[in-house]
Every structure is written in structure tokens, then in C-alpha cells.
Image (tube, rainbow, N blue to C red):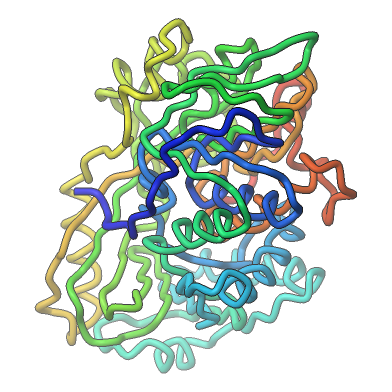
Length: 440
């Protein structure tokens, strides 16, 4: 079952020409469209399914600075400031709340890892506090677990995946952008080494710039234009409960993570538990991803599935010969892993006596698109003027979404970037440089 997402109406008529087209209406694409429109650009936002139909509505909804790779920290700081102001700017609640994040563990090595991140926190001015065993026990009202300690990330928080991207899309439209759902991009129009427009299933749009924010589909879209983007998708599972008692707003432990939603339910998952399916695209980029696979081998299960034959990593997608593949896959919505669903529920019920009767409302699967170093790409494409990429968020995209969109808009409008864009350039993954694996 797919998560419920607030619906957004479509503009039926395609514009003949715009300054920029954004392909993909997840959190990154909608944020990019919003910040481009805010700069006075005419924008068309394209989505093969509906706004936030894939990973952006299937996320935990965390908006965090804690435990990020240092390369992401400047964008994270910008994102948190943007999250805090977006509701006022757009006039809609995105569900953003600075609730703080509570991490607790009964694993001493994990606690030491959190302690080791504190120099990064000090460098970027992030307020975090280590918790003793007694303090961790007081922070989480439970009696069945004995924590060795924890961490309180004070200024972090959450937003609502069901409404955040739709609100950004509507905010972009209020500034003049148009939104086109069930309208897949088929390919770019190129002349003299520059983008001149884009072909969609509903017609052609002239454009000076195109941003690909297509999530798991990005590598396939770039590949049909001869551009290499090493990308792999891991399959994850999450659960949405029915409304229940409040045991905390945003909680993390080694065997569960919980985010309380505005309606009193919880989104729950287990960090690091995912499946990596063997696919033609995965085989192609195996060398680039080998260091990351080795680092995370114990947490990721390997196997074969439908992804080998259908979807963004299939042979059809890799070959790039079928321009209709995107519209034939409106929503990438894999089934949840039932054993993982049961494990999530067992771990939570076993920790909180007051949640012994906790009920599932629905569960879902999702494909999280990753880069070899687990750091996003926000970059112009050297081989093709006017073409840009914002993808490979590696499970970090929701919280970073506003900052990623803001940086993409700066690059497209040729402004001086607010952060150094070098760590996010596509070239770092394709020029033969050694890949430094970051944090997932």
C-alpha cells in the first residue's frame, strides 16, 4: 500500500516555452521549482505520476543535522533555516516542528560513534548533548530496555512527508510555475551542445534549462543522453501505525526509529535494514559501489527481484531505447518486506509496554537512490549546457530537500552559491577520483 499524499491539481495545458523545466516532483524537485519561481523564472514542473508519489512520501520525515557527513553539513544548516520559514513564506503548514531528536542505545560501540561526531557538531554550531544511561532512560518512558546512554540533538526535528512536497509545489504555482502530473519526460532536445527543450508524453516545451530531480530514475534519464551517473537503489520498508499514545516525537534506537505524525500516529522503521537487488544497472556500477557494499554488507541483504526486469535499474532502462518507460512506471511502489514489518512491530512493542496493543494502519516499501559515496549530487552537467542534476540523496533527501532545491536554483540562475558546490558535483563520481564513503 502506498502512503496517502495530499493531492495537487494539475495544469492541463503545457506551456510552449519556459525558462526552466524540473523533471520530478518529489521534495527536491518541488523545492527547486519553488526557489526558481521565487527568483522570477518561469517554471514547468513535470511528474510521471503524482507529486511526492515515490520516496518523498515514504520517508521517516526527519529534518536533522545530527550524524551527517561533514560534506552535507553546510546544506543541512541552510535546509533547517529554510524549513523554519517555509510555512510563513508559502502560507501552508509543511508539518515542520523543531522537536529535537532523541537517540538511545544499548550498544556501547554505537554510543562511541555518536560521541566521535561531536567535533563536527562543534565545528558547525550544532547543539547536541550526550546522555547518560539514567538520562536516556528518563527521556524515553519505557521499562523493558536498559540503555547504556544516548544523545539529544536539540534543534533537529521533523516535517510531514504527506504534505511537504505538495505544499512546495503549490507554493511554486502561486509564484507562476505550472504543474504537470501524469506527464513523463521522454528526453531532451539538444542543439550545439546545449539543452533547447524537452519532449514529454503530452508534448514539447522549449526551455533554456532542465533540472533532472527524478530520484531513482535519474541515472536512466541521463544515460539516454550519454551521461554517466553511478546510482543504486536499495529497497526499504516502513510502517504507519494507527493513532496511539505519545511515547516521544522523534526517537532512534538500534532496532527501531519512530516519528510521531501530526495525527497522532507513528511512522516506524529500522535504520540500515534494507535489500539490495541485483540489477543490470547495479552490475554496471558494481565497481563504483564496491567500497560502500563492503562497509554495509552486514546491514544490507542481497538478492534477486522484479527490479532486474522492470523499473529504473532494469535492462530496458539501462539501454535507454524505450522513451515510454517512465510513463509505463507511474509510481515506483515496491511491496514492504513482511518479515521486516513484523520485526519493527515486535521491537517497538517489546520496548514500550504502553504500545503492546499498537496496530498497523498500513506499510509500504520504497527505493532509496544512493551514490557511491552516500552524498547527493547537485550539479551542472559538463557535457551538456543548460542541463542539471539533483539526485542521489542516499536516504538524506527529505531533510536536505529545501537546501538541495535552493542550491539547484542558484546554479541554474547563475548566482553565487550559498555553499561550496564542489562536494556535490557529478564529476567527483566519474573522474576516477577515490570515493570516500559517507554516512547513510
